[in-house]
Image (cartoon, rainbow, N blue to C red):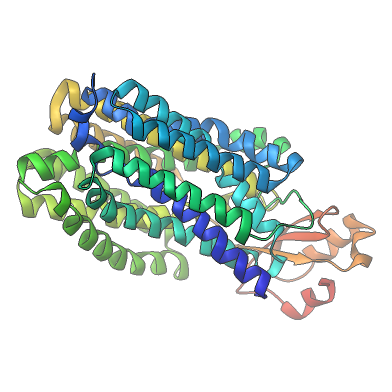
Length: 449
Protein backbone atom coordinates (compact mmCIF):
# COMPACT_ATOMS: atom_id res chain seq x y z
CA UNK A 1 0.00 0.00 0.00
CA UNK A 2 1.11 3.57 -0.59
CA UNK A 3 1.34 6.20 2.16
CA UNK A 4 -2.22 7.44 1.55
CA UNK A 5 -3.65 3.93 1.89
CA UNK A 6 -1.63 3.20 5.02
CA UNK A 7 -2.85 6.47 6.54
CA UNK A 8 -6.40 5.58 5.56
CA UNK A 9 -6.15 2.13 7.11
CA UNK A 10 -4.79 3.36 10.43
CA UNK A 11 -6.94 6.48 10.79
CA UNK A 12 -10.27 4.89 9.80
CA UNK A 13 -9.52 1.86 11.98
CA UNK A 14 -8.94 4.26 14.87
CA UNK A 15 -12.25 6.05 14.16
CA UNK A 16 -14.09 2.73 14.03
CA UNK A 17 -12.35 1.48 17.17
CA UNK A 18 -13.04 4.52 19.36
CA UNK A 19 -16.69 4.56 18.38
CA UNK A 20 -17.25 0.83 18.88
CA UNK A 21 -15.29 0.96 22.12
CA UNK A 22 -17.73 3.59 23.37
CA UNK A 23 -20.70 1.42 22.44
CA UNK A 24 -19.32 -1.87 23.77
CA UNK A 25 -18.08 -0.55 27.14
CA UNK A 26 -21.62 -0.37 28.46
CA UNK A 27 -22.27 -4.07 27.77
CA UNK A 28 -20.50 -5.64 30.78
CA UNK A 29 -21.49 -2.99 33.32
CA UNK A 30 -24.99 -1.59 32.72
CA UNK A 31 -26.83 -4.38 34.59
CA UNK A 32 -24.53 -3.76 37.59
CA UNK A 33 -25.50 -0.10 38.00
CA UNK A 34 -29.28 -0.36 37.68
CA UNK A 35 -29.69 1.20 41.15
CA UNK A 36 -28.15 4.44 39.86
CA UNK A 37 -31.13 4.89 37.53
CA UNK A 38 -34.59 5.62 38.86
CA UNK A 39 -37.49 3.49 37.53
CA UNK A 40 -35.08 0.78 36.36
CA UNK A 41 -36.35 -2.77 35.87
CA UNK A 42 -34.54 -5.75 34.32
CA UNK A 43 -36.58 -5.29 31.14
CA UNK A 44 -35.73 -1.59 30.88
CA UNK A 45 -32.07 -2.30 31.57
CA UNK A 46 -32.09 -4.85 28.74
CA UNK A 47 -33.84 -2.32 26.51
CA UNK A 48 -31.16 0.24 27.38
CA UNK A 49 -28.44 -2.24 26.37
CA UNK A 50 -30.11 -3.10 23.07
CA UNK A 51 -31.84 0.09 21.93
CA UNK A 52 -28.77 1.46 20.16
CA UNK A 53 -28.93 -1.59 17.89
CA UNK A 54 -32.42 -0.58 16.76
CA UNK A 55 -31.41 2.94 15.73
CA UNK A 56 -28.19 1.63 14.19
CA UNK A 57 -30.24 -0.75 12.08
CA UNK A 58 -32.74 1.93 11.07
CA UNK A 59 -30.23 4.60 10.06
CA UNK A 60 -27.22 2.71 8.72
CA UNK A 61 -28.45 2.14 5.16
CA UNK A 62 -30.15 5.57 4.75
CA UNK A 63 -27.01 7.37 5.95
CA UNK A 64 -24.85 5.24 3.67
CA UNK A 65 -27.03 6.22 0.70
CA UNK A 66 -26.99 9.87 1.81
CA UNK A 67 -23.19 9.86 1.82
CA UNK A 68 -23.23 9.03 -1.90
CA UNK A 69 -24.81 12.45 -2.50
CA UNK A 70 -23.36 14.83 0.11
CA UNK A 71 -19.99 13.17 0.72
CA UNK A 72 -18.62 10.69 3.25
CA UNK A 73 -16.98 13.02 5.73
CA UNK A 74 -20.04 15.21 6.44
CA UNK A 75 -22.10 12.10 7.24
CA UNK A 76 -19.37 10.62 9.48
CA UNK A 77 -18.80 13.92 11.28
CA UNK A 78 -22.55 14.28 11.82
CA UNK A 79 -22.81 10.69 13.05
CA UNK A 80 -19.99 11.11 15.55
CA UNK A 81 -21.46 14.41 16.76
CA UNK A 82 -24.82 12.71 17.33
CA UNK A 83 -23.03 9.90 19.16
CA UNK A 84 -21.31 12.47 21.37
CA UNK A 85 -24.61 14.21 22.15
CA UNK A 86 -26.20 10.90 23.12
CA UNK A 87 -23.22 10.13 25.36
CA UNK A 88 -23.52 13.50 27.15
CA UNK A 89 -27.25 12.97 27.74
CA UNK A 90 -26.55 9.51 29.14
CA UNK A 91 -23.76 10.82 31.38
CA UNK A 92 -26.09 13.44 32.89
CA UNK A 93 -29.04 11.07 33.26
CA UNK A 94 -30.19 9.46 36.49
CA UNK A 95 -33.43 8.09 35.02
CA UNK A 96 -33.76 4.89 33.02
CA UNK A 97 -36.12 6.40 30.43
CA UNK A 98 -33.77 9.28 29.66
CA UNK A 99 -30.88 6.80 29.44
CA UNK A 100 -32.85 4.69 26.95
CA UNK A 101 -33.42 7.84 24.88
CA UNK A 102 -29.71 8.70 25.11
CA UNK A 103 -28.68 5.23 23.94
CA UNK A 104 -31.10 5.51 21.02
CA UNK A 105 -29.47 8.83 20.10
CA UNK A 106 -26.03 7.21 20.31
CA UNK A 107 -27.06 4.50 17.87
CA UNK A 108 -28.65 6.89 15.38
CA UNK A 109 -25.20 8.18 14.47
CA UNK A 110 -24.79 5.09 12.31
CA UNK A 111 -21.61 5.52 10.28
CA UNK A 112 -20.37 1.96 9.66
CA UNK A 113 -21.49 1.71 6.02
CA UNK A 114 -20.31 5.24 5.26
CA UNK A 115 -16.89 4.60 6.80
CA UNK A 116 -16.40 1.51 4.65
CA UNK A 117 -17.40 3.48 1.57
CA UNK A 118 -14.90 6.21 2.49
CA UNK A 119 -12.20 3.56 2.81
CA UNK A 120 -13.07 2.38 -0.70
CA UNK A 121 -12.87 5.95 -2.04
CA UNK A 122 -9.35 6.31 -0.65
CA UNK A 123 -7.79 3.01 -1.75
CA UNK A 124 -6.81 1.45 -5.04
CA UNK A 125 -8.70 -1.60 -6.19
CA UNK A 126 -5.92 -4.11 -5.53
CA UNK A 127 -5.39 -2.91 -1.94
CA UNK A 128 -8.99 -2.32 -0.85
CA UNK A 129 -9.45 -5.74 0.74
CA UNK A 130 -6.41 -5.17 2.97
CA UNK A 131 -7.79 -1.88 4.28
CA UNK A 132 -11.23 -3.42 4.89
CA UNK A 133 -9.65 -6.31 6.79
CA UNK A 134 -7.64 -3.86 8.89
CA UNK A 135 -10.79 -1.94 9.81
CA UNK A 136 -12.66 -5.16 10.58
CA UNK A 137 -9.87 -6.27 12.87
CA UNK A 138 -10.14 -3.02 14.82
CA UNK A 139 -13.75 -3.86 15.72
CA UNK A 140 -12.73 -7.15 17.34
CA UNK A 141 -9.96 -5.40 19.25
CA UNK A 142 -12.40 -2.70 20.41
CA UNK A 143 -14.80 -5.34 21.72
CA UNK A 144 -12.07 -7.08 23.71
CA UNK A 145 -10.71 -3.81 25.13
CA UNK A 146 -14.22 -2.66 26.06
CA UNK A 147 -14.84 -5.82 28.08
CA UNK A 148 -11.73 -5.03 30.14
CA UNK A 149 -11.81 -1.24 30.53
CA UNK A 150 -15.58 -0.80 30.98
CA UNK A 151 -15.67 -2.37 34.47
CA UNK A 152 -12.45 -0.54 35.44
CA UNK A 153 -13.69 2.91 34.40
CA UNK A 154 -17.03 2.36 36.14
CA UNK A 155 -15.23 2.22 39.49
CA UNK A 156 -14.27 5.90 39.19
CA UNK A 157 -17.79 7.25 38.84
CA UNK A 158 -20.28 4.58 37.88
CA UNK A 159 -22.23 4.80 34.64
CA UNK A 160 -21.56 8.52 34.28
CA UNK A 161 -17.82 7.91 34.11
CA UNK A 162 -18.31 5.39 31.30
CA UNK A 163 -20.57 7.70 29.32
CA UNK A 164 -18.21 10.66 29.77
CA UNK A 165 -15.47 8.39 28.44
CA UNK A 166 -17.59 7.57 25.39
CA UNK A 167 -18.07 11.31 24.87
CA UNK A 168 -14.31 11.80 24.88
CA UNK A 169 -13.90 8.90 22.45
CA UNK A 170 -16.47 10.47 20.11
CA UNK A 171 -14.53 13.76 20.18
CA UNK A 172 -11.31 11.88 19.40
CA UNK A 173 -13.09 10.27 16.46
CA UNK A 174 -14.22 13.69 15.22
CA UNK A 175 -10.69 15.06 15.42
CA UNK A 176 -9.36 12.05 13.53
CA UNK A 177 -11.90 12.49 10.74
CA UNK A 178 -11.29 16.23 10.43
CA UNK A 179 -7.51 16.34 10.74
CA UNK A 180 -6.11 12.86 10.05
CA UNK A 181 -8.36 10.92 7.65
CA UNK A 182 -7.63 11.94 4.03
CA UNK A 183 -10.37 13.56 1.98
CA UNK A 184 -11.12 11.68 -1.25
CA UNK A 185 -10.84 13.57 -4.50
CA UNK A 186 -14.03 11.94 -5.71
CA UNK A 187 -16.94 10.08 -4.12
CA UNK A 188 -17.87 6.94 -6.02
CA UNK A 189 -20.48 4.25 -5.55
CA UNK A 190 -18.60 1.00 -4.94
CA UNK A 191 -20.40 -2.28 -5.51
CA UNK A 192 -18.06 -4.16 -3.17
CA UNK A 193 -18.03 -1.67 -0.28
CA UNK A 194 -21.12 0.49 -0.65
CA UNK A 195 -24.89 0.10 -0.56
CA UNK A 196 -26.74 0.45 -3.85
CA UNK A 197 -30.46 1.11 -3.56
CA UNK A 198 -31.41 -0.96 -6.62
CA UNK A 199 -29.74 -4.06 -5.17
CA UNK A 200 -31.54 -4.03 -1.80
CA UNK A 201 -34.73 -5.74 -3.00
CA UNK A 202 -32.89 -8.58 -4.81
CA UNK A 203 -30.82 -9.16 -1.67
CA UNK A 204 -33.97 -9.40 0.44
CA UNK A 205 -35.44 -12.02 -1.88
CA UNK A 206 -32.31 -14.21 -2.06
CA UNK A 207 -33.04 -17.12 0.25
CA UNK A 208 -29.47 -18.03 1.18
CA UNK A 209 -28.52 -14.45 2.04
CA UNK A 210 -31.66 -14.10 4.15
CA UNK A 211 -30.58 -17.20 6.07
CA UNK A 212 -27.22 -15.52 6.68
CA UNK A 213 -29.08 -12.45 7.92
CA UNK A 214 -31.08 -14.69 10.27
CA UNK A 215 -27.82 -16.29 11.40
CA UNK A 216 -26.13 -13.04 12.39
CA UNK A 217 -29.38 -11.79 13.94
CA UNK A 218 -29.59 -14.84 16.20
CA UNK A 219 -25.87 -14.78 17.06
CA UNK A 220 -25.95 -11.20 18.31
CA UNK A 221 -29.33 -11.69 19.97
CA UNK A 222 -27.71 -14.51 21.92
CA UNK A 223 -24.63 -12.49 22.84
CA UNK A 224 -26.62 -9.47 24.09
CA UNK A 225 -29.10 -11.61 26.04
CA UNK A 226 -26.23 -13.39 27.78
CA UNK A 227 -24.66 -10.11 28.84
CA UNK A 228 -27.93 -9.01 30.41
CA UNK A 229 -27.24 -11.58 33.16
CA UNK A 230 -23.56 -12.63 33.17
CA UNK A 231 -22.26 -9.48 34.94
CA UNK A 232 -24.92 -10.01 37.62
CA UNK A 233 -23.83 -13.62 38.13
CA UNK A 234 -20.20 -12.57 38.50
CA UNK A 235 -21.02 -9.95 41.13
CA UNK A 236 -24.03 -11.30 43.03
CA UNK A 237 -23.46 -15.07 42.95
CA UNK A 238 -19.70 -15.48 42.56
CA UNK A 239 -18.94 -12.43 44.73
CA UNK A 240 -16.48 -10.95 42.23
CA UNK A 241 -16.20 -7.18 42.53
CA UNK A 242 -17.03 -5.20 39.41
CA UNK A 243 -13.48 -3.83 39.15
CA UNK A 244 -12.19 -7.43 38.99
CA UNK A 245 -14.45 -8.58 36.15
CA UNK A 246 -11.72 -7.84 33.63
CA UNK A 247 -9.81 -10.77 35.13
CA UNK A 248 -12.58 -12.99 33.76
CA UNK A 249 -13.10 -11.30 30.41
CA UNK A 250 -9.46 -10.92 29.40
CA UNK A 251 -8.30 -14.57 29.69
CA UNK A 252 -11.56 -15.93 28.30
CA UNK A 253 -11.39 -13.64 25.27
CA UNK A 254 -7.70 -14.36 24.65
CA UNK A 255 -7.99 -18.13 25.02
CA UNK A 256 -11.16 -18.32 22.91
CA UNK A 257 -9.52 -16.19 20.21
CA UNK A 258 -6.50 -18.48 20.08
CA UNK A 259 -8.68 -21.61 19.97
CA UNK A 260 -10.93 -20.21 17.25
CA UNK A 261 -8.03 -19.46 14.87
CA UNK A 262 -7.40 -23.15 13.95
CA UNK A 263 -11.13 -23.55 13.28
CA UNK A 264 -11.09 -20.55 10.94
CA UNK A 265 -8.04 -21.90 9.09
CA UNK A 266 -9.59 -25.35 8.68
CA UNK A 267 -12.85 -23.84 7.52
CA UNK A 268 -11.32 -21.57 4.88
CA UNK A 269 -8.11 -23.27 3.78
CA UNK A 270 -9.46 -26.81 3.79
CA UNK A 271 -12.92 -25.76 2.59
CA UNK A 272 -14.83 -27.11 5.59
CA UNK A 273 -16.85 -24.00 6.42
CA UNK A 274 -20.26 -25.59 6.75
CA UNK A 275 -19.27 -28.46 9.05
CA UNK A 276 -17.15 -26.19 11.30
CA UNK A 277 -19.98 -23.65 11.26
CA UNK A 278 -22.36 -26.29 12.59
CA UNK A 279 -19.80 -27.36 15.22
CA UNK A 280 -19.52 -23.72 16.35
CA UNK A 281 -23.29 -23.52 16.78
CA UNK A 282 -23.22 -26.75 18.79
CA UNK A 283 -20.66 -25.08 21.08
CA UNK A 284 -23.12 -22.21 21.58
CA UNK A 285 -25.95 -24.62 22.39
CA UNK A 286 -23.74 -26.52 24.84
CA UNK A 287 -22.75 -23.28 26.57
CA UNK A 288 -26.37 -22.24 27.03
CA UNK A 289 -27.39 -25.66 28.38
CA UNK A 290 -24.46 -25.69 30.85
CA UNK A 291 -25.23 -22.15 31.98
CA UNK A 292 -28.91 -22.94 32.36
CA UNK A 293 -28.27 -25.99 34.57
CA UNK A 294 -25.43 -24.62 36.69
CA UNK A 295 -24.95 -20.85 36.35
CA UNK A 296 -23.54 -20.18 39.82
CA UNK A 297 -20.49 -22.49 40.04
CA UNK A 298 -17.27 -20.79 39.03
CA UNK A 299 -15.44 -23.43 36.98
CA UNK A 300 -18.48 -24.83 35.11
CA UNK A 301 -19.51 -21.26 34.32
CA UNK A 302 -16.03 -20.36 33.04
CA UNK A 303 -15.98 -23.48 30.87
CA UNK A 304 -19.39 -22.62 29.40
CA UNK A 305 -18.32 -18.98 28.90
CA UNK A 306 -15.21 -20.16 27.04
CA UNK A 307 -17.25 -22.47 24.80
CA UNK A 308 -19.56 -19.57 24.02
CA UNK A 309 -16.77 -17.28 22.91
CA UNK A 310 -14.99 -19.95 20.84
CA UNK A 311 -18.20 -20.42 18.86
CA UNK A 312 -18.95 -16.70 18.79
CA UNK A 313 -15.46 -15.68 17.60
CA UNK A 314 -15.46 -18.28 14.85
CA UNK A 315 -18.88 -17.26 13.57
CA UNK A 316 -18.12 -13.57 13.82
CA UNK A 317 -15.09 -14.13 11.56
CA UNK A 318 -16.63 -16.57 9.08
CA UNK A 319 -20.14 -15.17 8.57
CA UNK A 320 -19.00 -12.14 6.51
CA UNK A 321 -16.91 -14.50 4.39
CA UNK A 322 -20.00 -16.62 3.74
CA UNK A 323 -22.05 -13.54 2.79
CA UNK A 324 -19.36 -12.68 0.22
CA UNK A 325 -19.40 -16.26 -1.10
CA UNK A 326 -23.19 -16.43 -1.38
CA UNK A 327 -23.73 -12.97 -2.90
CA UNK A 328 -23.42 -12.13 -6.58
CA UNK A 329 -20.20 -10.43 -7.57
CA UNK A 330 -21.75 -6.97 -7.98
CA UNK A 331 -24.03 -7.04 -4.91
CA UNK A 332 -21.49 -7.87 -2.22
CA UNK A 333 -21.44 -4.37 -0.67
CA UNK A 334 -25.22 -4.16 -0.48
CA UNK A 335 -25.44 -7.70 0.90
CA UNK A 336 -22.97 -6.77 3.65
CA UNK A 337 -24.99 -3.64 4.46
CA UNK A 338 -28.21 -5.63 4.87
CA UNK A 339 -26.31 -8.27 6.87
CA UNK A 340 -24.95 -5.60 9.23
CA UNK A 341 -28.45 -4.21 9.67
CA UNK A 342 -29.69 -7.66 10.71
CA UNK A 343 -26.79 -7.88 13.17
CA UNK A 344 -27.86 -4.64 14.89
CA UNK A 345 -31.51 -5.77 15.01
CA UNK A 346 -30.27 -8.87 16.81
CA UNK A 347 -28.52 -6.72 19.41
CA UNK A 348 -31.75 -4.81 20.01
CA UNK A 349 -33.98 -7.88 20.32
CA UNK A 350 -31.43 -9.73 22.47
CA UNK A 351 -31.20 -6.88 24.95
CA UNK A 352 -34.93 -6.21 25.15
CA UNK A 353 -36.11 -9.82 25.24
CA UNK A 354 -33.23 -10.91 27.49
CA UNK A 355 -34.20 -8.22 30.01
CA UNK A 356 -37.88 -9.19 29.80
CA UNK A 357 -37.11 -12.89 30.30
CA UNK A 358 -34.87 -12.04 33.26
CA UNK A 359 -37.68 -10.03 34.81
CA UNK A 360 -40.28 -12.76 34.30
CA UNK A 361 -38.34 -16.02 34.71
CA UNK A 362 -34.99 -15.16 36.26
CA UNK A 363 -31.42 -15.96 35.24
CA UNK A 364 -32.03 -19.57 34.22
CA UNK A 365 -34.87 -18.38 31.98
CA UNK A 366 -32.42 -16.22 30.01
CA UNK A 367 -30.22 -19.23 29.30
CA UNK A 368 -33.27 -21.30 28.27
CA UNK A 369 -34.09 -18.48 25.86
CA UNK A 370 -30.47 -18.61 24.72
CA UNK A 371 -30.64 -22.36 24.15
CA UNK A 372 -33.83 -22.01 22.08
CA UNK A 373 -32.21 -19.23 20.03
CA UNK A 374 -29.11 -21.40 19.52
CA UNK A 375 -31.22 -24.32 18.31
CA UNK A 376 -32.91 -21.97 15.83
CA UNK A 377 -29.42 -20.92 14.72
CA UNK A 378 -28.49 -24.59 14.26
CA UNK A 379 -31.49 -25.11 11.97
CA UNK A 380 -30.38 -22.12 9.91
CA UNK A 381 -26.80 -23.45 9.74
CA UNK A 382 -27.91 -26.92 8.61
CA UNK A 383 -30.08 -25.39 5.87
CA UNK A 384 -27.22 -23.39 4.34
CA UNK A 385 -25.96 -24.76 1.02
CA UNK A 386 -22.33 -25.71 0.63
CA UNK A 387 -20.61 -22.53 -0.58
CA UNK A 388 -18.43 -22.14 -3.62
CA UNK A 389 -14.94 -21.23 -2.46
CA UNK A 390 -14.52 -18.38 -4.90
CA UNK A 391 -12.67 -15.21 -4.02
CA UNK A 392 -13.89 -11.70 -4.84
CA UNK A 393 -11.35 -9.83 -6.94
CA UNK A 394 -11.35 -6.27 -8.26
CA UNK A 395 -9.30 -5.10 -11.23
CA UNK A 396 -8.83 -1.69 -12.84
CA UNK A 397 -9.59 -2.09 -16.54
CA UNK A 398 -7.67 -0.51 -19.38
CA UNK A 399 -9.73 2.12 -21.19
CA UNK A 400 -9.92 0.02 -24.36
CA UNK A 401 -11.85 -2.66 -22.47
CA UNK A 402 -14.47 -0.14 -21.30
CA UNK A 403 -15.63 0.67 -24.83
CA UNK A 404 -17.61 -2.55 -25.22
CA UNK A 405 -18.35 -3.96 -21.78
CA UNK A 406 -20.39 -6.90 -23.09
CA UNK A 407 -17.44 -8.08 -25.17
CA UNK A 408 -15.04 -7.49 -22.26
CA UNK A 409 -17.29 -9.46 -19.93
CA UNK A 410 -17.39 -12.34 -22.40
CA UNK A 411 -13.60 -12.28 -22.77
CA UNK A 412 -13.06 -12.28 -19.01
CA UNK A 413 -15.41 -15.23 -18.54
CA UNK A 414 -13.32 -17.18 -21.03
CA UNK A 415 -10.29 -16.87 -18.74
CA UNK A 416 -9.76 -20.06 -16.73
CA UNK A 417 -10.79 -19.56 -13.12
CA UNK A 418 -13.09 -16.53 -13.58
CA UNK A 419 -16.61 -17.53 -12.58
CA UNK A 420 -18.54 -14.23 -12.45
CA UNK A 421 -17.97 -10.78 -13.92
CA UNK A 422 -19.63 -7.40 -13.39
CA UNK A 423 -18.24 -4.21 -14.92
CA UNK A 424 -18.75 -0.68 -13.61
CA UNK A 425 -18.09 1.94 -16.27
CA UNK A 426 -18.30 4.73 -13.67
CA UNK A 427 -15.46 3.22 -11.65
CA UNK A 428 -13.64 1.75 -14.63
CA UNK A 429 -13.31 -1.60 -12.86
CA UNK A 430 -14.35 -5.21 -13.19
CA UNK A 431 -15.68 -7.11 -10.18
CA UNK A 432 -14.73 -10.76 -10.43
CA UNK A 433 -15.37 -14.01 -8.64
CA UNK A 434 -12.42 -16.30 -9.15
CA UNK A 435 -11.31 -19.80 -8.31
CA UNK A 436 -7.73 -19.23 -7.17
CA UNK A 437 -6.81 -22.86 -7.72
CA UNK A 438 -7.33 -22.67 -11.48
CA UNK A 439 -7.03 -18.93 -12.27
CA UNK A 440 -4.75 -18.14 -15.19
CA UNK A 441 -3.08 -14.90 -14.04
CA UNK A 442 -1.18 -14.41 -17.30
CA UNK A 443 -4.44 -14.13 -19.27
CA UNK A 444 -6.00 -11.70 -16.82
CA UNK A 445 -3.02 -9.36 -16.80
CA UNK A 446 -3.77 -8.02 -20.29
CA UNK A 447 -7.03 -6.47 -19.00
CA UNK A 448 -5.46 -4.63 -16.07
CA UNK A 449 -4.54 -0.97 -16.25
